[in-house]
Image (cartoon, rainbow, N blue to C red; front, side, top):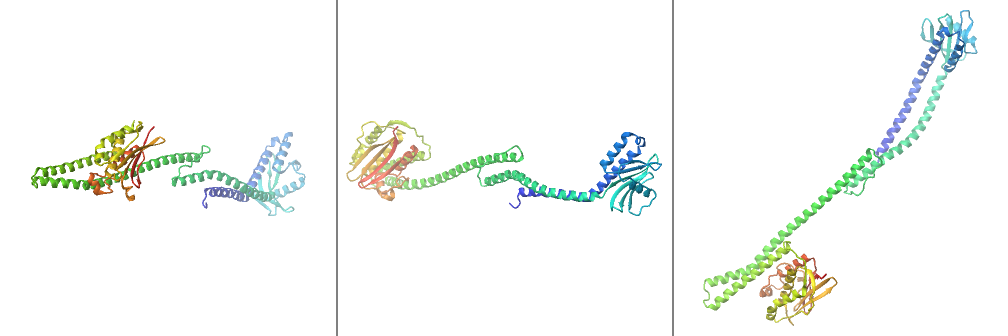
Length: 485
């Protein structure tokens, strides 16, 4: 990253350290010499103050203390009594110092003296010695008891000391910058790694990936931020999950509503189409009766029979539509119970015996042993009745209807086969659609409404069981399955 916090952090600290070292170097160069001279001046005044205490000059311990002070402060001192004799001296070349003192007293300086401070008792000055070409700080003057003194300390070495100190500071500074830069880089890396991890987590969160979590180390501000991001991630995941669930339910509701609207339109269209013919017949024959088209009793009875026939057909269709409507919209309760399937089938066959004789059809069912299954007994009876009625209305050829029960593990398959013409292949999938009729003229002939198989479909779907139709060369088989355990 071009603008990485790690680089910025390390750069700022390295810059500050380098700037601090350079500033120290400048301050050392500019002010160290002046500070050193002031410190030397303080040392001279300290020695001078000790000499001013004339009551101690004759003490035995004074000389030792005085020499120690002069030695630690690098000051040469000579004190001359009133008789011209040497009282105190801390140097080997006493004569040279005495000669220098007399020259000052006689004011024979040649311009190599720079006076710093001058009073009636002492003179503080900077002097360059002609012979050695070295600079010294000197303090000379009179003590309270009339003795004269001279104090001297070299200052020439300070220049070399400043130069050495600056070089040493430069070397140490470069090494310190390198070492500190490496340490700062490591420290900044340790600090920025959690931030980069949090940035990666936030990026993945923006892509709706909430699986990653920040593993907090310690209890600092970054760990606290990571903990809050984890909570935010969990909250967002739950919220988005709830929103997706609500959105999915909303889509399902919308699709269901659209499906219901479509079914309602289709229902109204189909019902109006199916009722149009019987209503027209009823209206026509009723008008014929009213206008006495045929006055004989036989014709009137025929007209009444037609009207009653069509009314009965409409009544059956309406009842079936109501049953189908309850099944499709889940308003009908499915009661799962254990009952004898063989007994149900035999009951339906017996109720259709008259119709079978009219059709000259033979219904074969040779299952005598009771067979218990789990389902809604009334609805299973409705399925069997629809299959058998459908078979009777389409039976041809040998006019045989076979009802069979076949075990398939925990399931049993009930099939109703009738001899006759196979159903066209393109109509097989449409058989279960409301009001669909393969042969409309023939359906009209036996009073079919095209709703029976739709009822079968709704019932079997409410059971969550399979159903279907199979074509054979000599007929058609309809089947459905039930649970027997």
